[in-house]
Image: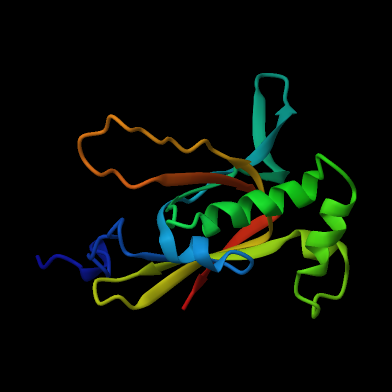
Length: 178
């Protein structure tokens, strides 16, 4: 009896973890130097439906998206690190209100609302073995919430390049075929 072709997947190529592109509209220098992206987890809430015997879970309506984490090489003028830093300072304006308004004046004038200037979109492109993009994760209304410390060390024997890490919140993400 022949084995049915429907028992096997149509694509047996596996995903390569170092075949990706990354871009954040507001942060082109971070995009170029990106070394690692952690695609966030998602959670769908469930609701227990009581019965006389057991509570039966049913799908809820609220999805939770975890944070987007990236790592990037810091350039020697620290422009990519400072771009995230300045965005965070503008949103938090720790010294005075002008920090926010001055930053907003530098943002894209084609954005229709002042609130939209706080955010950016980001895309993680997934590449196949021939470096063709097959899928993309699109993150909407993204903004930085954390910029991890960077370490300088005079006693290091080898040259280890400085890695920056940042964490972002966003509204939601989609996965699109390209």
